Image (cartoon, rainbow, N blue to C red):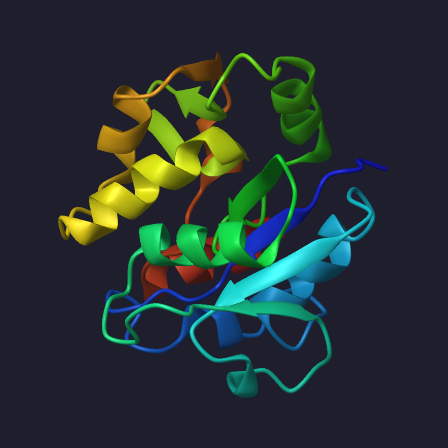
Length: 190
């Protein structure tokens, strides 16, 4: 088991889905969040769920609620909350809507990460995957400055940091469930 925290990001707005995708049923789990939590608990010693309000979930878990503005739905806000809550040098992040990112992908990211980087992030021919990778504490000050300037673009943050990109060929494993048709497709793939 991997000995750094994993954080599942489940606090998005889900505007393209039309309902909170973190609460959608998935596979044999009551929610997509529970599906992710169950499978990631087999890979990591500690798994957290980042969200706006933990009260939306009807199960017990390690939650990290956003402590910044409740009106901004951006991963940058969650990152600041995570850095304030966890006293670790680095953690792995994954979006709740990426249920096919495998242990092999996670292991490859870990194998290529070291303390000389600010982040180690997955990349495919479709672009970078900022919600699949390792973020180091060296990013904390940059994130806080971005949020102060009302800039929430993770891609820009990674571009302006010492980021190690790990290339993956199988884009299907990075399927994001953003709308009803992608959700239906994911249900057939599981």
